[in-house]
Length: 402
Image 1 (cartoon, rainbow, N blue to C red):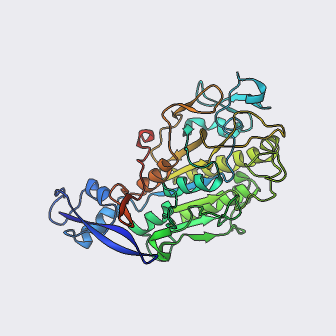
Image 2: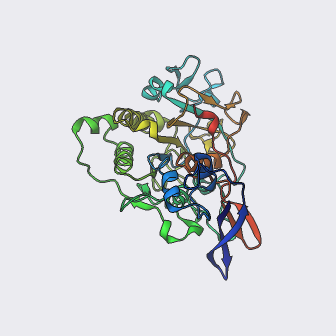
Image 3: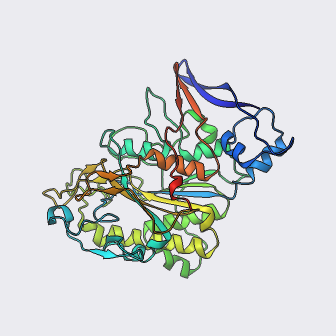
């Protein structure tokens, strides 16, 4: 069977589509069938030798799958959320106690009591790390595209990759961004939330938070905060058929209390005390509400939910009772889909400053989201000048799937 892989070529400053011919062995189920393995390999790209009916049957295996990426814009502290260090000195440990969770031996910060009660329903990653520049935009790009923009070329958002290779049906947006687009996160650079070199046809739809026709009990479930309204919007979107949703918990970091807790007014007024007073209670309620709501509606098994920031925070408190940028180590959670509840992937050292087991690159998040939605990114390449690059140079976190 001959498979045609899309490549994107830069000519005269503009991106144009090209085709690369790759020979693969046949692995089909009859003359009109296509195995699940073959469709994963092809990833919804243009295929020679398979009928449209066969492709449609293959796509049906994945179109019910949806994914939500909750971008904790600003970069939350690992120590004040999912990786507390109760035995560390106070300048590292911070001001908060840790608490037991539903998983024996697993502790969270006391700022997250509701998620602690549900810890047996999701996995925790404690070893995210990257070595790019310690600015918001690099982490945002890596999480959402798997790559850093280079030479003026922007790589596509994970939802755009899914929408291009496994389109949604009808008029429903295949990919949406809630509470965005991102602006003002530090420097003038790409945030990883555009269709990039795929072209405007696959641009994510921006969906603003608006009043919803929902019951009072549902609003109470998520809470009345901006976080709660944003995550409720994400559920509405995937329930209506949107397959890929990214939620920006903040669309900007300028002069606001956000996860970006420097404690320096020139960078943003938040300190770690704002985690206890506002940020974590609102996040705790909103994410717990989303997981409960998806489960009650029978949507959680088909919906992958990932919540993390673009980096972590310094292991030592600064003089303003804040923490600064720290891309060497941070945490996040993964729920729904086939994720093994209660699992912990990776580990940090005694100060939560560096991974000591199974470092996880942020690009693995993009690869996981794309793979869950049924697109195998491994054959997808981008031709930049004369260099052919894997579109997403990371593998999905399949070790967490039961």
